[in-house]
Length: 268
Ligand SMILES: NC(=O)c1ccc[n+]([C@@H]2O[C@H](COP(=O)([O-])OP(=O)(O)OC[C@H]3O[C@@H](n4cnc5c(N)ncnc54)[C@H](OP(=O)(O)O)[C@@H]3O)[C@@H](O)[C@H]2O)c1
Image (cartoon, rainbow, N blue to C red):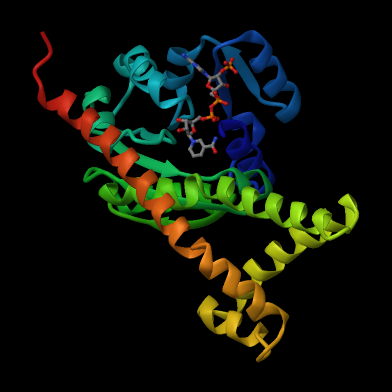
């Protein structure tokens, strides 16, 4: 995700390669990033990179975020911006770990940021100024569509759009399988299924119409589409998706709550 964001930022010229430093755990990843983006990349140089930075973006797995913040906390400054991409780690925990009164942001991107077609939820702490919010928004606008939310809503954003591409991949996979079952070739099934999802999503976005209206426009009385929709309703596709996103939100909320509880429990 860090590499995808970096690629989008460089492509959109939000930053220049000479302004970016990436740090990784292994030398192989650092070398690959340096080669791919023409930036300075080091393994294990978190402290040095953070000390020299205006904006620090944490793109490690949630389980590693606290460890990395503790590594860099003594070089963090109030004039810097700290951005975490980690799921389930609320702003209050990031602020407590940082221990410096600084602007802290959370971003929940999704994987299409690789193509600058991401959907990104953003939240900020009370310290962040308007200018800092605009700066952070410009970074993420380079790789997709941005929505500001309260930090408490980040669990729902994670479940809807953060994980969302995985649900859509299943949908496309099933469409391809259906094409195969009906005797279409692999190539034709794949191309038709992917373009159908892409085109329908663009139609929803560009028309500004509710998808139910667009769906109704495709239905001919007594026709093919309504026969399929009847089957989808019978098997509960819509309800299944709502339940899936509800379950994912709850899962994220439970983890977030546990993080906040550990903050409230005095450490021995
Ligand atoms: N993947 C998604 O679709 C998605 C969506 C939304 C948000 N996110 C969030 O994005 C974050 C990153 O996820 P990911 O899927 O990109 O993880 P990932 O593929 O495992 O990448 C993590 C990166 O962090 C580096 N790293 C690990 N420990 C480090 C340390 N101590 N110091 C410096 N670098 C370290 C790793 O370096 P090495 O390569 O050398 O091991 C690797 O480059 C997570 O917090 C996740 O919640 C991901």
